[in-house]
Amino acid sequence: MASLNQTARGLNKTQNISGHAAYVMDDKTKLATMALTTLFAEGKFYGDNSTALLELAARLCQQGEGSYVAKLAVWARTKGNLRTASHVLAAVVAHECSGEDFVRPMVRAIASQRGDDGTELLATHAALYGSTVRWPHALQRGIRDALEQMGAYQIAKYQSVHREFKMRDTLRICHPVPRDAEAAEAMDACVAHTLAVPKGWESELSERGNTAEVWNELLAEGRLGYMAVLRNLRNIIASGSDVTPALDLLADPAAVRRSRQLPFRFYSAWRELKVANLLSTRITRALDQALVLSCENVEPLHGRTAVLVDTSGSMGWCLSGNSKVVCRDTAAVLAALLVHVSDDAWVCRFDTTASPLAFTGASVLADIEAVPAAGGGTDMAAGFDCLMESRFDADRVVVLSDNEVNGHSWVSHDFGYKAIQCKLDQYRSFIGHDVWCHAIDLQGYGTQQFIGAKVNVLGGWSEQVLRFVALAEQGFGGLVDEIEALAL
Image (cartoon, rainbow, N blue to C red):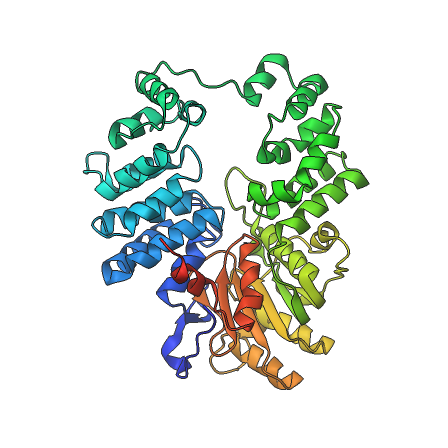
């Protein structure tokens, strides 16, 4: 949303999970920030909010806002690059709004993204509501629409043979009409459990070994997708294979756009190479260029940008049990990309204390590395104090945080109601103009620290969230506005 222009701030008072002052977040923004910062059923520092997400999505559907939840599900899949959260939202919409016109196009849009999205949608609905519950017709028909566009190769590739819920189950439930004879044959064989899974690069490596020869062949024949190359870059380089095709692919503008990788994936790959002592300037340049290309649709930020990066202990929590990426990494990457698109920028980190960071704007990866490891309390006020001490006259302040403000120096002072909004007001008075504040929520716990005019509350890990900084300032609205405007 562009702003929460509330005049009676007292009506919006609440507490964050840490038990400290915050403002109530409206339900649509709350659901968006939750959905775009949640790997479903994965714990967070302050607890898993998956149940709260489910309950809020269902409540909005029951209150007549199912269309918004449906659009958010599509946006999360197509723009936010999150699969499971999208499937969960779509399953809730299909269950709660089964007779509404927007359900089928929502399902079709999500199920058309990848060959196994339809299967995962059915599996998610079964997990949430039970496999004996009658399938919503709109869910079946939307998945059927997507299946009818699939060719034989996709059907064979996305059989999900090692999953509890398989493509053969999806075909039996949705009864698609094959697009051609070849697809019909593949569907029949899939249901009969006789369809061979196409031999992929994983099988090739398993059979022949992780050697330079095998990697060279796979790269030369174009058998590795963008994600496969990015995630296996360490293996490719360590094998001694020719890294040129891999780096050319990673730095190719069209390939970056198609890949829809979350920006922190590039940093994660670079960090793995650094730890393994496999970096070179050429490799760093390619990954740096890929990161820059990933935000090419973000409008330049004219004027002066102040960026406050939360490096408190809670930001050291891993996004997933299967990942080494922590919340601080997402904040650091988005901060570096903000500096890259800004005319001029000043950056500081805050936890129990705050201090400026030596961002240069010359290399995104180098700027990310300037953000220290997470630790300490969350004293967001210290970040604003550091900003005022610097006398940096910003046109906008961007705060990257999980919003669980609990810093000791902050709560020990008597500022009346102690949400950090009053520190923003103090900074505005200090510099003499009504600066914008863009608060990017990175964990979706459901409360906010800022409220009022020229406040833009956002959430997400994708570079897409950065688009709304310029858009909101130009009067085009924010994240919720774009989701509301999505056509289904």
